[in-house]
Length: 612
Image 1: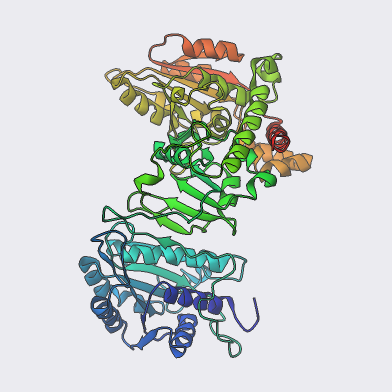
Image 2 (image 1 turned 180 degrees about the horizontal axis):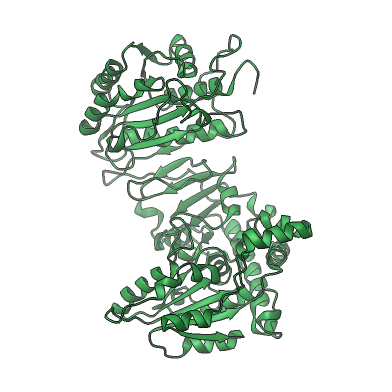
């Protein structure tokens, strides 16, 4: 960052420039010190004729002036489709910190009840000064309560790489909420902006060229819901080299889209989209092969992808166009802050089967592109199949380098299309991600997978599985669960059932490696491998061995417990009739999880390269 442009000023200039490009014409400013970076940026934009700046001494008057500007202004645009409602043009109002913010509240309440799109940009002290008695510092976070459609507290910029991109991605969400682009419910939004000294440029600034955006920033277009029969939030004109990413809750539409268009499908276990001729096995490792992924031009995201950093890296690539399909009016998934557009749905024609050559799933897309991804998926599946096959477990689970994967495969292999599988967070869901479908040649044979991926915690998983089992039983469906030992212990209290409470049938497979092996696959595992001292620290604060006796724990709750030592016994136990809640414990090693995970990923990458 140049000495002449402090981080606070650079952030304010980027924000104001983005407001202009998003259609804001009028901004009302009340004077103050903490809001100085915004004042400089607004004056610069006003002098250049990019917006109209209105200055008022009283913040209460400023708020109502902004309200009137929004009420009397012309719409920003007309939404897609016949009869679509106009998109309202937002007006921004800027204040300094302290009581200045509170004085906006009357206008905010009016805008809330009237559905007027006000953007409240309130300057604040940096976090280190809050609660210290610093002048003009109070708790501004959440000050408008339920009267705003969206509220966010933005930390003070410090010049780190990518912070301007992240700021504008945040304010872009605020603008979309103010205009009601997702839910048709426009109204006020609150962006609380912390600024740290210095608050002014050290020298005269060179004017920013119109339309300038921070490096790596892609402005997201939020497309309002289609309102007419001809509406079609289309994808790019030539989207042949496209992937479909199906995250948690995507539903069968992701698979239908991939097969109708002839696009490869990367589907998480709880997506509801797994299987089919275009599904790519072990896609998390496949994505590491640059020779395959460098040709990707577009990704269509459905659901919320949460399992893989490699997927997020793909979604953040500057040369990849990302379209997010997010039904409903809530926030859209875009952890990479890189989406080109957000739509509530795609026109039916995108998922409609069409006559084509090349067999099922071929679609009209680039046949060579799809063929390469299918070959990659077959090569990856062969590696995982060999690593988890029964003959690879000749020394038993304790001696198998991929025992947890083999357990996940054994559980998946006995499940049919009418079965439900509840899978725990951390490693179990990632293990299932690698093996699901290996033993189900027909996509229609795959079970439905349920997982708590909203926040991906391990808490409450046993109770969630019990609730799923109760509901599924009413529909004649059988439920099983696959969880890790820490997940099981975290919610062991869920096994408690009073004598007058309804019983339920549920088999819970606990993969017990005496600790948290997920951390071994992260950077913490690298530190543990670097030195004995690192290993000791890792084992205590991340590995967290517990030594718990699950059999005795289950006995205390009156729950049946069975310890199995090989996958054959596990399959037999899962296929046998059972009543009530049964815990099936499988003990696996944890010591070499990092090396095993990386080794398998390297084998997959090698096999994929050989197949291309």
